[in-house]
Length: 505
Image (cartoon, rainbow, N blue to C red; front, side):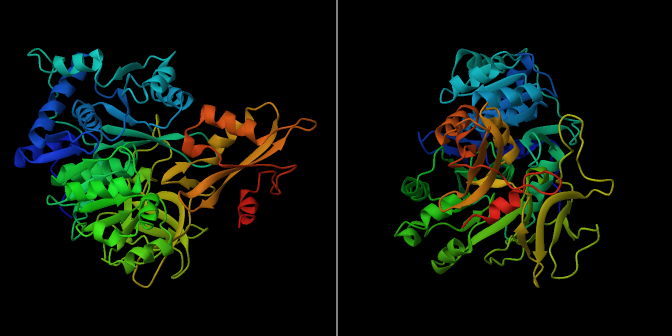
């Protein structure tokens, strides 16, 4: 596998701008606004210089709470170009969640837009984080400052690729969220791995529908990073609706659609789908399992969906069915070039052939541990134990049989029961709570909460729902709340979530 000569992720943009200066880089589907590679690169230069002149320094954190718009791309690469660490935030977060993450990360600045300005402002209140809104005077001043002759220019000549680039908060299921530290080295390595697949998932001739939110690692590196590295044109879509999205596909001649399963589920109900996807070369599903029934529906249309497996800590892609060009239901394919995978049994040895084992990953794409001290990263031999379980079939392709214990995936987004349980437990009438995932036809899974009231007190479903809506992003809120007298426990006293899951139809 040939490694990219880039040392900073923003070097990819510089190289593409030099090769494809006048080609369209990004189009905003909502407004029709577009930018060329040369114009984007110049904007990134100006913004990077402006951020430095504004007083930000290499290594400081800049939070991005923006939807899929050109300003996200420009600010992201500008921050990387001047050595800042980007903290992408879900635009569905509540003020409580924003406050928690900007506080724990020590973010110097949060860049947002007017669609979530009120939430971002409340989240930054009482912190040292400066709020900057796209289009306001402060944002414009930073851009203009970068054009001044005395503006400091980023010097990346001897840039260390081990420098932290992105901080993405993720978690196990039994504790608070943890910030996975992704270096420039890790992000670049995963792009190199994807580019080494033959044929490449994204090429310079592609027009990519970027409907995945760019604050998610899947979109941020496997799609945005790849598009910038290859010079593909990207069509940015802020909100997904089945038929309007297909109209965008036709209008812009989209050839490549990377998405999460809910997109493919929604499209599968459109009657003339095969005609609408006639010009599309590649469909890729990730972030959550695609049901075999939906997979087969697309296969019957002659539009195979490629699947893969990844995680934030791997920046993110570990395996793909594109590696061996074998789409098959239930498979996430083989390890991508440059990434090693072991299946490990409970004793720490390699699992027997045909037996499932925990997925261990090794490669230059792995993260540098969790914020701020680097704890929990790869072991001394470079292996990272994912907590996910799979088996390899006769072709060497992986099939997931379980995933991180208790994790719930709603529309491709991770929901950690501990976080939801912590919010619900704050209610004075709640004695005990357990959260599990239950199947949902539209989102793959949804959140269900079992709640035990304090003895002698009454508790209603509406009270739990209202509390969650105040403190959690919508996708994390339970759609089902069941008030129960007791919860099952293990012999050690822990709530037996597995038994609760077994009760589901």
